[in-house]
Image (cartoon, rainbow, N blue to C red):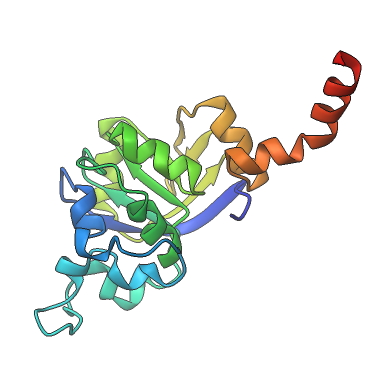
Amino acid sequence: MEPITRIQSRTVVMPSTNIDTDQIMPARFLTTTTRAGIAKHLFADWRYDRDGNPIADFVLNQPEAIGCQVLVAGRNIGCGSSREHAPWGLYDFGFRAVISSEIADIFKNNSLKNGLLPIVVDETTLEWLLANPGALVTIDLERCTLTLPTGAVVQFPIESFARVCLLNGVDETGYLLSQNDAISQFEKHRA
């Protein structure tokens, strides 16, 4: 995972509410245990027609979506089953943050563990973001702020350990491994 300290990016907007994990990553693509290349299945039932051709007007198929690191979604993204493949697909596509007024707990936890920053904002902020697709936003994870092009600065909550992991670009196991010297010293003195 890449460390996240600051993200400055245009947004991709998906105003739908209750986007569940089966829409983000359909169950038929859960056969892989590797993340590489999984983005091709992201929102597969919304992105492609029955013959596998891209649906031209779907937001992720638009040229404006290329290079965007921030997905703004309607209320309650990530509801449904607990599949890590959903944040894997978003991350592999290039997203580093997902913003909504409500993010399902299991999806939020899976995102945090896989390098994707879930940001919960108030309804007014979400409404502005949904009405302004492609807005250039700045996310500062050290300060836990989202800055809009209007100059408005919005604080967002994040669990402190998950924040440390994201800032350092490690998952929970990577964090424990980074503490190996301290663990060894503790065990040495305890013996």
